[in-house]
Image 1 (cartoon, rainbow, N blue to C red):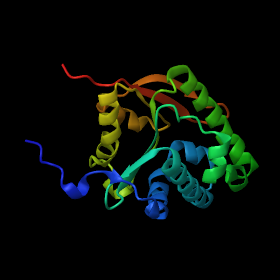
Image 2: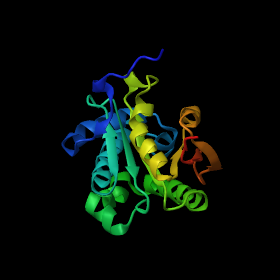
Image 3: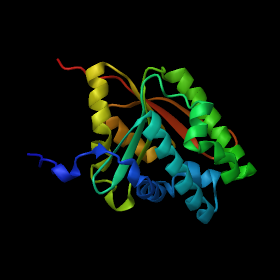
Length: 211
């Protein structure tokens, strides 16, 4: 029999006052991500940029999405809700993400823009704006492979199932595919990113229905 999950390990809404700690955790989680290694080959610059980027993404999601973590910040999940998955100029400005080109520098920003253009194209082709978009899911290194990611995404998956809504995400790490497939996602597209030695996968999850 499967052991029940302790209450202290249940996902909770991420308190925005813990944004800096969460950004530091996500920085560690994504330090060796294939996309960010390709965009920012220098490790020290990558670490600094990832902290800044996740800090702003968490602020964006606190304003326009929903975020879950575990009480001890072993991981975090950030979703954009149906009808709100497009990042508008006004929202980018308010969240501080507008500073990304300056933070990255011209060469790195051009590489990152190539990825953004490709992933946006895939999303338009394979995902309606009426979906839940899993923007960020990260688990701190010592806690990976222990079921943390599954617990973090469960609240929105259950909500989507109850409302009959689709969930969507992208990943650039092939090792993540099996994890998402266990949670009902399926690959709907894959493509190379122009100018980068990076493969990206689009995954979709139809709502589960009882019966």
